[in-house]
Amino acid sequence: MNDMKTSRIKCEKSGLSIFENDDWPEMVNFLIDVIIRLEKALQVPIKEVNKILKNGIENIHIGEENNA
Image (cartoon, rainbow, N blue to C red; front, side, top):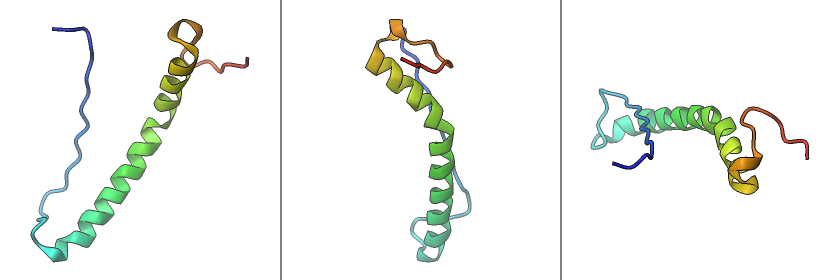
């Protein structure tokens, strides 16, 4: 097995059916809420990864601002 790490995020709402048109508005609202919260949660980590990719891993200090 390789040294790569993986993660999974799962979010579900029970009691709804994709086959019931009356459930769709609740499903859409649920998905909108979840994606907004996910985006907020990942905003800082994604910026850090972006810095690493742009500057090279040897030039970055996670959690510190790069004032160059």
